[in-house]
Image (cartoon, rainbow over all chains, first blue to last red):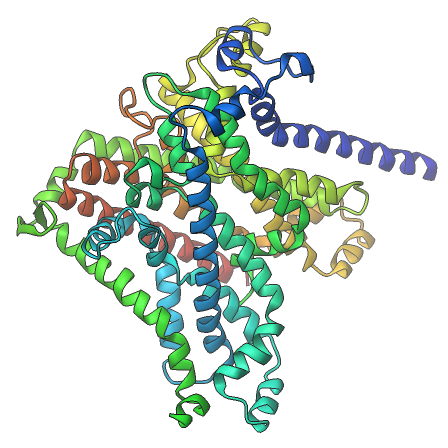
Length: 283
Length: 295
């Protein structure tokens, strides 16, 4: 009887593992498909369909060559734009959002709850509603079609402020008082004492902000008006047209867009997951 | 000057200044402007005149109803997929009997790393119109007719929902896994001693304790469902047959940026805000009432 029960439990485990192997295959299949397709010309792909076997003779790097050296291809500019915008946005956002979150988490002051309520208010309104006046504002400020236009409106991120505030609220404030006794300025307290303690929070937010920015679509689509200023998602979208998509470049361009994120993820899964699920941190 | 750097009362205000500035310039000002513009006819960038409720009256048209319907169906479908499936995945992957949990968690999470455009490219390949595209070749092998996926309302909706499901199941699963880890082990032990089966343990212990996280993910799913844009843009970036894929935000984009009618765009925006707020309030109230009954 006991052996029977054990065998049944073992059976259940095997079934579960099998089930999740299927789930994994389904989850990774679209990426694998795209990766394999990037080594084929679209003509060949559409005529004969997909061949999932890895046959070196039938695979070519032509699509990637087209991306880098093709006439009129400015994929590298898109890549550069994406990298620069992501780096500038993430750095600025980490700096300002962590300061605000730190103030809300570590200090007692009169406007504290009021300011925190404003942060939550911004979190609750979809940005799509504000994009028309924001567009007019950006035009008025003369930063349409620039990096600044993409970056500035959303740099002080309410989501990151919220996360930093939660994190700082959980830290001990004893070090701050000790620092004050030693004659440290309030700014020094943040940069020398608290910021190092907030390192895991910085890691998680850096990854989340960078990924959101790297992948962001609607706002750059509105701000960036000319081809050479596009980020990768906007540039790729511009390759899709009702008159036939430029699949050769589209597929290889999409593959190269996701590779940096997958590498980052494999290197630091824990920070990725805690960043992406930060909204659920208990208050 | 020296006092400024040592003042404990002043410092938090200085630290909060970037947020307050950004809030006024990039939130309050646009929010008020959207509201005002929704009652205006906007000509060019700086010229406008008030036209009362005319923009809102013009909203009562077939296209807006179609957009509203598409968002509603899409939201319901994504909620139906994005809550039960990740809950089940999380429960299975949290089980001690399961092997290779770390690997499976990471693998299921990977789609969350893609942008909607990159994911869309992959989906357009798989669900291509030609007989050689993966899904159609599969259908043909099964003896079924191939589909023009992007040309019908039903299959078009399925494409958007599948794309969203593919990208978000992993994220929700990780939320639920985090929630499961907070449930004390003793609860399960005593349930086992009472002879509770796996299903009743799930129903009476796991589910109620996951409720706060489920409500959180539900709120996010509704919020994201009604502001959906990229999932539609990636399949129908220029035109679309009929109004397949026309969502509220695409309607804003179309009116404001393609037809240059900022007033109409703003009226749609204010309506969207009202919809999102009402649904979220209703839903919070509904679940709040549930809580009182349970206590």
